[in-house]
Length: 371
Image (cartoon, rainbow, N blue to C red; front, side, top):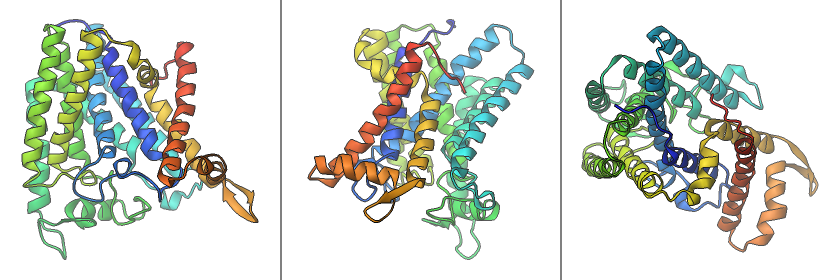
């Protein structure tokens, strides 16, 4: 097996994913958004539903590389476990900070979240990688996905019975209501899209990335690696599409079909980036995304934090108190576009570019914040 190589394609893919996360999280007007920039209402998928599984998949790939590097330099398993716990704890804590700012209502703060799920999936996948060989990791993936499907369809929910998959009326929502009552997503209050039970198939998505990272470290030619990713991605897309007939593709529940289907897209996207950048050597076009990818988590964290503050703080405008974000949107972007959706999208793109500029400054100074 080869020593780790720096994959520019992975940095670019990570940067594309972070840019997508910021784009879909930051419209100027939530009532005027193109459908592909919103999550599917329930079953099905949109461009927005690509973003989170892509990031978890990338976490898996990156963790395989970083773990292999540390093992090869002689780090003990005890050292690696401490590093895993430390990093996961920091990411989880940052997620809690985003949930509690700016109101600091500890009694009702949301406990789950995007960064919290990343932390848990990173920790789970890293520990499994540390103790389990790649073939056994594939067994873990199958067990997590099949076990989740069996649980969702076969374990009865009090007052509902078994097999229900409606919003707020399913086993995952019931588990959330038992354990996270009063600490869930404000838009539902009765279930959480980053809840407890659905984190298990999300862990399977991360492990799919870990197996991809293992394959990328094998002594194969780069063309062979690109071909394997594209072929594996196609297979996962077919399997996920067929699985959709039995368990619908659903991001909020992170259904087993969704996990496999999105792993397929992630493999195809990374395989394409790898072929273009690392095989063909066409790197110039990817520089924009590489800049983001080198400081991914900090860019996401800052974008969410600043948006929360822009929404929270108000100033007098037109005889009433108006959020800073709304004033910026109404005075700068609305007058430029006749279609409100274009104005809303332009705001999101401009907001994205602010944080790209911050990431670029860090990049040029050689500052890479590894949370």
